[in-house]
Length: 83
Image (cartoon, rainbow, N blue to C red; front, side, top):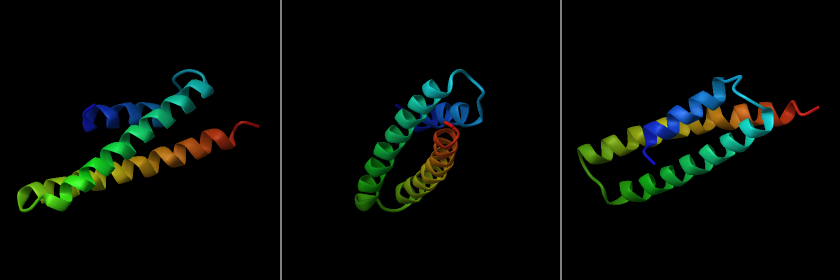
């Protein structure tokens, strides 16, 4: 799955009042796992990259890290609200 699509799904889950809490938590966990795998793949690719490609990969990794951080915060918020 492309990074843009994952980021779109993540932003929908983060900002949404879209459905039940349990489904939102499960969906968020799934997207976060995919983003983590994508980040690791890009970091491995970055080791052998140079020039413009390395620059692009660093930027994409930075974006994914920021989105994962937002997603983790939202997940913590949802799990904390189970009371």
